[in-house]
Image (cartoon, rainbow, N blue to C red; front, top):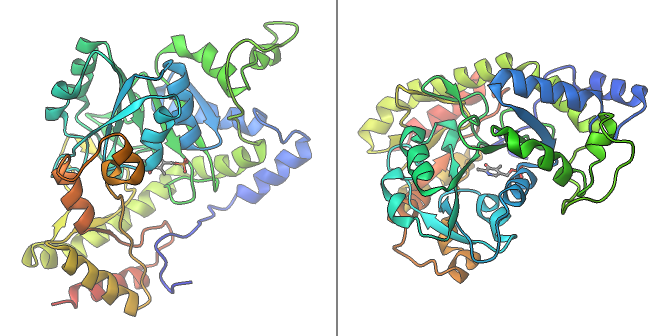
Length: 376
Ligand SMILES: *Cc1c(COP(=O)(O)O)cnc(C)c1O
């Protein structure tokens, strides 16, 4: 292991106690008491109609594709600069991903290109709030509405981020969260589907419970449950929910630790970056970011590599992604080719992400900053 890894699992203190409580309660399958606590937290905190824990953000995205009845031949607009699941969840239903480029400043989907990528076959736009900085929802939502296209937010990075004061994850008809180990709040592997249009709630509960109306059965609304729709098994064990609740309830501590780390990087690197033509994140005043990551964009791929190597020599692991989806093997099968998304391509070649986790110590962070600013 690197002396300073890129990411580290962080325990906030109560996770093990809550997991022991879940075991003692005697029900560790899904939708137990801790799952309900997590749902209530997300619903009241974010202000969504319904939150449903899932086994991952990927699965929450798959649920979104099922709920929107995405079918072969449908088109779904996704940024090329994102994680595979943003597109794959819809491809699984037979949809064609239409890759759109990103803005140079925020690395979010470039809303000015949206309208001309919409066709009669477009069914959904999936926005990704990169680094937890909001996409331009004030432009995107009216375009989508005008064309009758659904908006889904892949909010894996953006829990607790806001756009014009409103939480990310509350803008689309559906939104997804990730609680993977690399995200701000985690249970190792986990996620959530956020539902902002109540018409989706009943079917979401069915899809998440293997296509059965078991959830209504447990709520006492029906006296037996049966197979009523397509679905799968998307609910996590209450053990994971117990762990997650131990993190969620400490969200203020998590966010303030991450904010301090982000601000320290910014303060320590801003001057050096300006003098080396290196770009740091842009966070516009109407966006409150989630402090998910700290990235730098170098003038050239060679300069990025030199920095990754210099950090590595000091035992510091920095990473880069995403690789443009339209140039991946799968993306090319959908017609992607070099030059389709120029900003994505050049950003992907030059971006690097620094070690970022809640317990990154001041000393270790200073070592990272010194290693970078020591570079010519
Ligand atoms: C992490 C991530 C995912 C996938 O999350 P899982 O919970 O691991 O499935 C999806 N989209 C984005 C943008 C992510 O960063």
